[in-house]
Length: 259
Ligand code: PGA
Image (cartoon, rainbow, N blue to C red; front, side, top):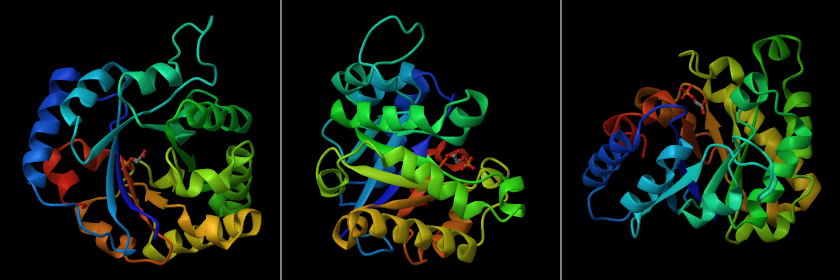
C-alpha cells in the first residue's frame, strides 16, 4: 500500500533557530505514538522541505524521529563550477533524505525547464534522495482547457530518466505533487473533485507508462492552499495520497492538524 505523505514546503522562511523551535513544538505535538494510517489506508509519513541553510539543523533536530527532511532544490551535478547551487550528494550527507523538484516557483521565477527537472530527478535519486516531482497548470492553462496536457508533459518529462519500477517501492523513492499554480499561496483551493480528476489522470498516465503495480505504489500529493479546514475533504478523494503544504506548514500546530 502506498504511503500517505504530509509534506511541508517552508519556501524561504525560517532561520536555523526558528527551524529548531518548529521541530521542538511539532515533535511535542506528535507525542510518542505512531503516525497512524492516512485516508488512503497507507502508512503516514512526514517530510519537511526546509531552506538549504536550515538543513543541518533540521537533520539534527529530527535524527531518530518519524520526521524526514528534504531540500527544496538541488542541482543536477554533484559538484563543479555552479556558483550558488547545492549538491544533491552534500544534501544527502548532511541529513536530507528527500528533494523537491520542479516546484512551480522554480519553474516560473527561476525558469527551470522540463529538461532540468528531469536531470534533477535523476541526480537526486542517484544521490540517494527520494524525489518529489511537482506538476500543475496555471490559471490561463486551466481556462484554455490545457490542464491535462500540461500535467502530462511535465510528468512524462520529469520521470523520463528514472527507473520507476525500482523507485516506486524502494528507498530512495519517488512521489508526485499535483499543485495547480492558481491555488498556490492564493487561498483558492481546488475543489476535491477538481483535484481528484487530475490525480486520477496522473495515476492513469503512470499506469500506462509503468504498469499497475508500479503506478499503484506511487504517492500522489495535492498542494495549493491546503489548510486544516479543507484538508479532510481533499484527502478523502480517490488517488490523493497526501498534501504538500506551504503557508499552513509554518506553524507546528496547523501542520500537526493536517495529519
Ligand atoms: P501553499 O503552498 O500551501 O501556501 O498554497 C503550497 C506550495 O507551494 O507547495
